[in-house]
Length: 397
Ligand code: PLP
Image (tube, rainbow, N blue to C red; front, side):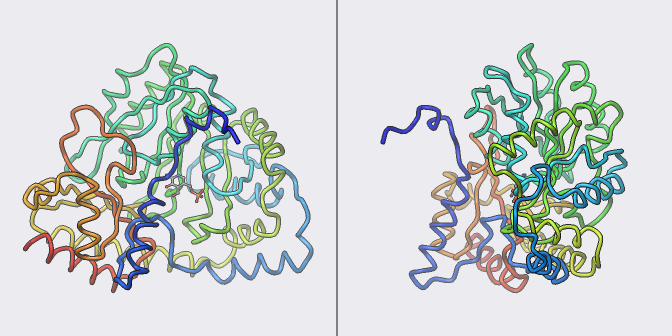
């Protein structure tokens, strides 16, 4: 069969290739310490599972509305309002099979072919893939390493805006860097958005994966709700990555378009699991809190060991389950400055498997520092200790 030309413009998540390599290495009998994938090895809270099973037994096994179950849309709008300070109603919510579908549906709803879209790089690779697949021009913007955090390169964003720029993709509480915008960055960004009449995809996949402080939403800033669509997901907060449930939250006009895309793509999201999500939002929060406690302990363990390695510096992000250490000095010392050689050598020598900066987009002009990404969502604290101590030994010898 001759594959359609547009498929040449479709990207992928290259982290899955790292996963395949790690699995092959493990199949040879080697110990692997999996820091490569943002999946979770923590069970979904029992009350969420029980609510979904009950819904299945109660017959919630047929189609449901393409917008999602009304009760879920209602409790989700209220939950988001409480944490964001927004004023959404169920009319602003279209349930999705995961967080990811909002990316393509937002682009399909708002981007015309030839439009320019600003997106983060390093960043989640699906933005670039979907922008280009649907005929847009993907324009990357980067981050600057600050003292305790990565900062948006606001100047670079401003300079790249042209009359064709229509959309900004913002992933605050970011994958892979863990970057979090401060109030000043948000204000500067909002000024750019208003001055240039942009729409914003607010990817808030990690809004609730937070250990200290309070997450803020760009969509809650004055005049922004009418320009923003929030990507919401149940995947991380309730350790439900494989259930596939999320939502698009935004102005009713766009949500109606997205719901029409739902009809065309999948008819509706899985019916009975939406009742599990209702329980997740409204029921007992003990296990959801335990998920955060577990992740926080893993974060602290990993950051402490990484920072004890001569030549590595690593921020301690307040949110997400990713670390993005600067490894330039240690890799220069080891003569491992080619990302792929570095990654493969470390896998072979220590079993520690991770992604590098290259899995999150092409390097930008002028980049001279080396970074790797470690996800600690799929590895227990004891294995974090074993793996990163092996890494330390290898890198310091
Ligand atoms: N956005 C970002 C930044 C992510 O890291 C992910 C998943 O890793 C997603 C969206 C998609 O999440 P989901 O599993 O809910 O589709």
